[in-house]
Length: 336
Image 1 (cartoon, rainbow, N blue to C red):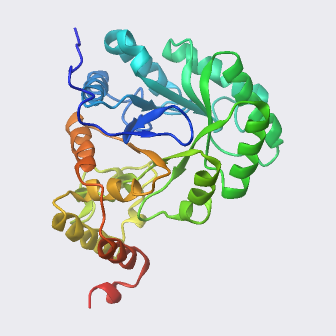
Image 2: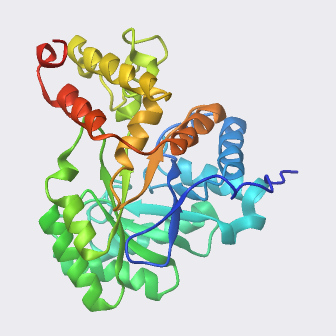
């Protein structure tokens, strides 16, 4: 029988999520990959239990995570029942709806019909009465934003979610969504955005908007699908995400120019006494508005390594300048 580490809350950092009373672990575990029906359940159990032993209380899902879609929630629910159910009140469980989940006109996007039906299905798959955070996973260009936000508000008022969040919204959409939710009486807790050293669109007004509105930020893919780790320092290894078909990291993304940047960033990480992954996580978390960074894992020891980033979150201005130069400039600039 699993018994959690009694010292699990002693070392990890928790950050206030926006202007709310909720604090999230600075590193959260995402179940986008490696928790589907094609994966080994005992490895999932080991990762979830190890994360909780380290003080990671937040587990992030979506209705379509797998593969196949829905299976990550099913497996998470199975692990809850076998190991973590007794500590449900110490957990933050989030899920989302917005991408294609079932056929027909009501199986994706942002209608009230889809969002609330999807949440009911997610709760059944996980065996939960409620989730802590329910997200609109993406904005819907054809559904009025008022309808989408009203569905989130209804989920909270029905007790099926404690907080409402949005994901992949641009600054203007975010401002409107936050205003609508505030008017409805269910403040927007959190915005989940893609953010890493290699994907910096969040810096084009979104982070500033979140700070001004009192909304927390949480980054997905802070390690750029594994590219910002030591795994690709020598190219694309066999068995890596970029070597497989059907993944978001393609071989075409792993160019020699990109690898040169990865190696230069790794040099900075070594100077700081960190791994490249730890540097990438610390860099994302340097913003005060960022409540947490979502990490994925295929082995429990990778979670330990990610949490190790929290021992060195500070940056000297010169370090940030060098990082900016590497990721935004021609290689000849920073190789001088």
